[in-house]
Image (cartoon, rainbow, N blue to C red; front, side, top):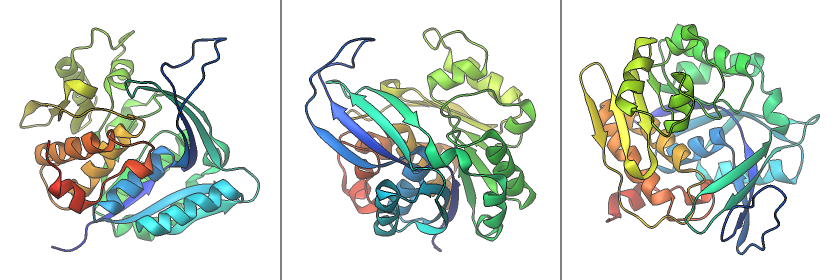
Length: 305
């Protein structure tokens, strides 16, 4: 089997992570524990995950001309991510994410986008040849809306499948959703997209049907410890979550999306790809950090629950 090729258009940050007993409330100061500073950003996380699983991955992104940008570039090289279209931006700093992780592995995140908000449709156009040679395009929402739209439109014009992870959530047009082959929201994002006030009483199956009625070919809603709901033309099924002791859930969704893209690019059906992605995501939450938590293919193959 030839190596699957994937292009990821998205964000690159550096994550500054502190563990604490609980996430601070407004006005509260909490004494934390372990501290790590590691490369992150949804686009970069998904790219690194897919590359570590064996895919040939090209990332389209922007980093600052600073120590954080150099850290990210070094990690891409180490992880095997192609950086031909990672632009070093001399006008904007690298994106930064401040992350608090509590004793249960839950997190709260504040992002300063920096160079990510300068990623443009023109940057995407420059990567047309890489997208054309890919089996799958992966995109998220930590970059400008017009850049997301251009990436999806270009991929569809080239006959390339599109995976959209709609995070962090924002309004998406029906026209854009109709161009998405696989939509991967979590329960909060799914609730927003179908007009629910809260995810508390979300019916994932009904939400998936509503999203498919908007034109999305396949919907995969990640539900944390409750598993993953997969809805396609031919099936609707809940995949149970693997039981692990969570240390840090920061990049679980990115691990899922990167692994899903890898499996689909390899030729797996949606349901099988989702099962594989659920396993990869479960492994990732047993480790601290974002890209540092992504397992290799050998680790996935040898992991027992």
